[in-house]
Amino acid sequence: MRYSVEHKQETHTRIVGAAGRVFREEGYGGAGIDALTKAAGVTNGAFYGHFKSKSEAFRTAVLAGLEELRQGIAMLRVERSDGWLPTFIGYYLGYKRTCSLGDACTLPSLSSDVMRSDEETRLAYTHELERLIKELAAGLPHASPLQHNAAQEDRAIELLAMLSGGAMLARAVSDPLLSERIARVVGAAALTIGHGGEPDSSEAP
Image (tube, rainbow, N blue to C red; front, side, top):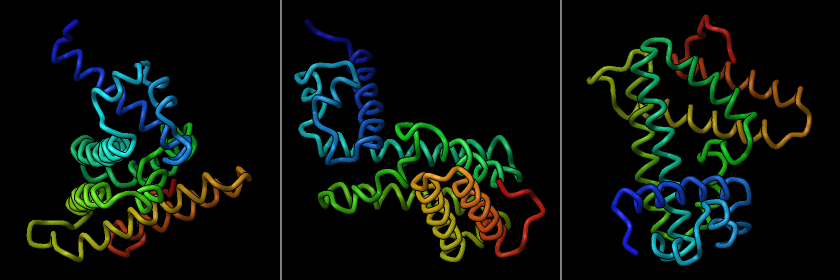
């Protein structure tokens, strides 16, 4: 039986989404092919019709997660204009900190697995991370075509490292009050970095 291009694309998208959730929940080492196919609702044969290996599925899921984050930032920049950064920080250290691990951000959830992955995955991750850094840097306050340089990107790197590290620490602790405290402290520091080192009048998340 032949499937349409649309059906194949829908199946591919479903497998990537399911793989991303399973990898975030179980880690690369804990996620077997059976778990991936079960989550996606496909057979092993269908899985291998889209991916040659688990590592290829992992690489694709990681890149999809980073692209989702980049697109989310781009959308917020358009919708919220000058107020997008506090909204982004609040969402990242709010919902993305407390949602199920399967729906968490790829950056804090899977970067440690990328460190241990093959060179092809690390190269692809590097490329997508660079795109993410540029997207974030372009939207920081006071950015302009003339100012969008290494200094702007350095601030973006600081923000991404702080937010992903903060979210990871806040998820790891068992004390809800400490988790909230980590989110509050990191959120306030992230706003300061985002505004070029000047304290912001907005409330921290």
